[in-house]
Length: 333
Image (cartoon, rainbow, N blue to C red; front, side, top):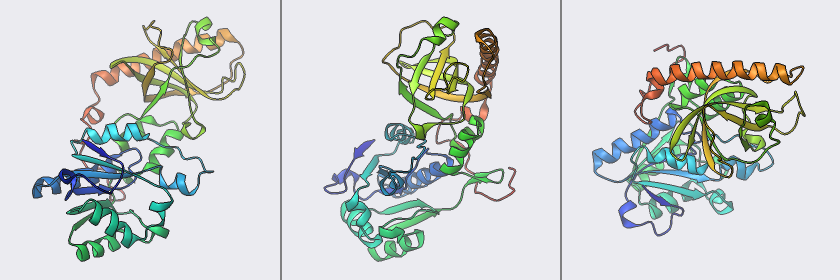
């Protein structure tokens, strides 16, 4: 997959593509349908397939003072894009110049002059251009004017709930990683570098790998069963996000205890998948009560992770291969 970060002087092999356009935060199942549609058009027409996203997220540009819980960093988003076999990922800088383009100029300068698109695929709620002046209907009319095809993917969902980045964020903030995973098509992941801490876990008998999160990245506080990827290997563990009320009520830190693991990983980058929520963050009367509950937490996490390893047919599907169901309120299929 080729990566481009500008729309001028697009290499000839990437021109004339079928291009999926959006923010794609989380690359959830609805986004995956947009990507799959662009790829199908590319296959049918014998042209390159691509995706265009924007960095930073437009809301961060327009409202920098308002924290945004991003489901996927740019690197994570590109990793997910690459699993589909797209020929091109175009990450357009969302800056004052991009924000000032009218809908017409965005199409004329970026899509037509820059990428010489043959087809564009977006979601039903895609807005573009200065003042959000463009939408799928405007895009379709401009496509007719400039000679490229347009496909609008309608709302996607399952069991009466539509796939959306906002809903995934809500589920994570409610402590429902399974519900979030059902919308994403994969277990939600967070990446970070292991840092030193107060070493409380070590002298409690549960040494942890600690990751400091941004305030905007916080999900529901408590204990989780997790899978952790280190140097390409997967490990099981129990993770805690909270303020440590038994001790200091400090800044939230994600602390992960890895089962049967003793390696020194300070300074290493690790990837943590949230699998299941075990319990809320609570204050214990003393360290002994805390340790007793930590042992119980670990046993629960081990049991959950063993079960997931044995059978989880929906989430075991390769990313991009999940069944996509058009959204209909009340649909229980």
